[in-house]
Length: 167
Image 1: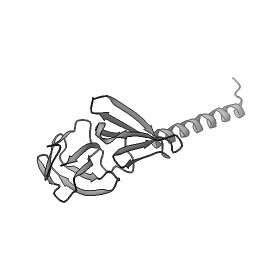
Image 2: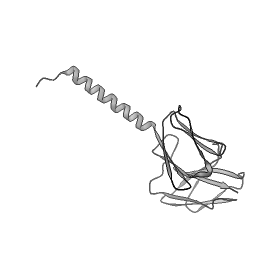
Image 3: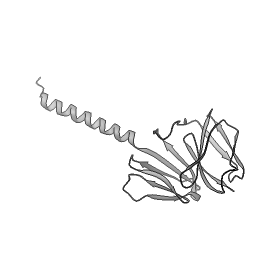
Image 4: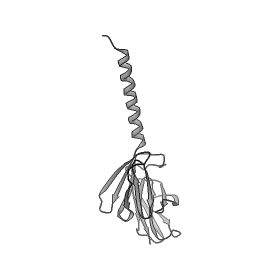
């Protein structure tokens, strides 16, 4: 059996480049799931050049840095979930974590409860995208929000996001 080494090397190099390119794409994208108040789900695959931000009372999603951003009013959002791992999320929750926050709207505090999460990293963002509070809590903890102004906030607990209204 005679093997054409030149053709074999080309196939090996092409296969290796394809694998590296595929891995780069797989590691570079972040899946963002937006669950609306009517329980419909919108899924976005955000490239490394894409971004998410808050513009007044709207969540803006630009999937690739080029396309026109999608705008979703915060009043229509139930939750925002990030699937996969990125350098922007330090601790990714397990699929068996079920986290809830209540009451919502809240006046002076809200509580977090979880089935599965031993510790919860809670971060609160205003609609400008600025982090206004952070802490580590356990299930049943009460989080004081008396210092926050009335309005809409995004509460990120592990990898799950919730809309919170401070009344």
